[in-house]
Amino acid sequence: MTFLPFGKAAGGPWSVEITPAVAGWDYSGLRIADLTGAPIAFETGEEEMIVLPLSGSCTVTCGSRTFELTGRPSVFDGPTDFAYIPISEQVVLEGTGRIALPSARATRRLEPRYVPAAEVSVELRGAGQASRQVNNFASPDTFECDKLVAVEVLTPGGNWSSYPPHKHDTAGAGEAELEEIYYFEVADQGLGYQRVYSSERGRIDTLAEVSSGDVVLVPYGYHGPSMSAPGYDLYYLNVLAGPAGERSMAFCDDPRHAWIRSTWNGQEIDPRLPFGRTT
Image (cartoon, rainbow, N blue to C red):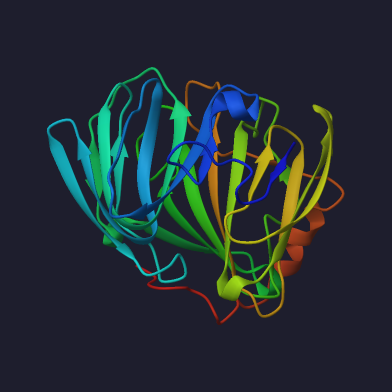
């Protein structure tokens, strides 16, 4: 199953718990904690993680280190500060709000780290109705992890992102092999849509109506567009990881639709962007 509506992937203290075992793959994972003041204690084991407030704030205790995450009112209020937690670590989360923990199975232990919101790279991509914002908090060229790659994408109402459709399921020149998770939040209790379809790697056919808390898994295949319904801004958290020794987000456009990129030439970026700051 590639579409997991909110509640379908709940487990233990987590409102969303996607592990490699749950997803049926080898690397990528995601947990969502809806904190109400009571602490959540856990071990990272063989997974490296990032603690990323979606709304609210929290304290992260990691071994002898403590990080105070200021967080944000919502995902539409700009980037947040975050903390990196390595493999084989004892962790306690405490606070109030919705907290995401993107993760990946890893073998190299790095140091725990804190990154302030001001240091998160913000990028505007596309143009016209394909305009979107990418918060590159843990992309390969902005933050060091062993296997984990994670970014946030924000799409104004009526726009399309993850467009043209693309894939990263076959290692080769210009393409990385990655397992990908989409976790969605939608403004004003709205809705959006996510498409995933077959590639040479295998057959898959998903067109899901998504709302806040929903998850779409992409083990392989072309994915996109992510469609933001008019009137409802769309957010998704992308979590990616794969077998390569060097982290990469390299992708291959669906050849039938790659020409779309050339239509952006001369178009302006949607003036509703950015959400939050630009530096």
